[in-house]
Image 1 (cartoon, rainbow, N blue to C red):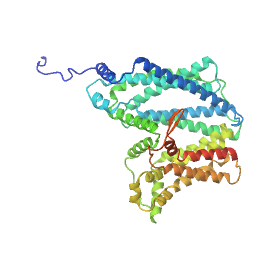
Image 2: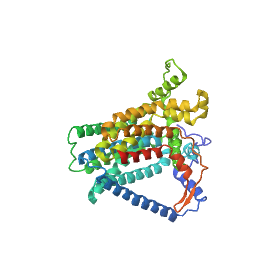
Image 3: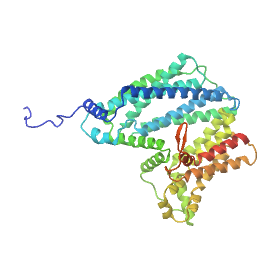
Image 4: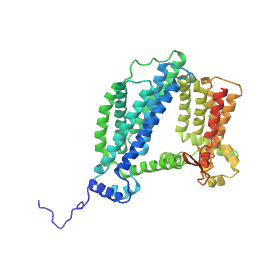
Length: 473
């Protein structure tokens, strides 16, 4: 064989490495800001101090509340096992959040100018992955310490093992989520990995509630298995990290940008105090995943009857709303068993959350004047038709959870249930937020009173209902 002629140029010649490109971008950014390293470290110190101080205050206040006679005393085993179920459910929700976020993500500018170039994808994403891995380990370690302290653990060694176990499982979850981000379409294991802890939490909650109502409840283990959890997390985190590093070249640009859209929507919704910005993105993604549906004829009748059937059919194509509605029934029974003194207040709050999951049609017509004009009829009629499903769902949910609370006055339960429906209606029909309202200058800074008033439409009435239940229940 002969060597290729010298006139043929190497197509990759002159392409900078990922480290060179990163250094060039860092120098370019440094010309446009004057923040020094001491300023960055000072801001980091303030944030750590803020989180540590207020976090420990929240833990202390929660421990005092659990020991308060007002809350009511429950079996220690019941609270322990329900806490395990809550951690499992939180793990499943966290996994879903990591899958929605990426977790690896890039900005649109980076996607256009860096990830589209012939740069080594693994070398470009590796620093981001390491930072995310460390952040996940530190965050879950703090969460492990908080959970152990909330459970009454004060031994430094036990708190250390709790922190180690939390860090190990956090790092393992982050690494495996990166592997899932790089997986080809059609693989089911990421979905199964998120569903297993949720199903385990539901089964454990059901067992604890049944045993608690039929007997003395499940006994609390003599020791918390933090050492065993740490021993299981270490090899899982190591294996996940190795697989994630190998999978970095397979993370495509589409998944990197999709997570950035979700992160930008969440940040914008937090800054502007408008959760609908994030909810709209989540809802549009959900409907796009459905892709294709089967058409069915409506039963004959007037126009309002067809609209009501369409609202019911919306629930058939959004089964997670009904699943959350049913899951909150079990959560209410668990809350009544663990915190008997707050069962009534929990019933009001969970009824609002359950009914709010059924307001998809109400929110859609309330946010689109064009849709209301296309459907015809008055706005009051359209909103009245689409509040039927949430009202029926709230009433049925309330009847199924009546055994968890004391009856109280005869008129209290119907009044609270009707108030929950009204709160859901007010939240579902909230108009777009107007940011030109009045603000008040206070010693704590400028407070946008009008903005808070618009954002509290619905939750403010819910807070009044909770107070009514606490004083009259």
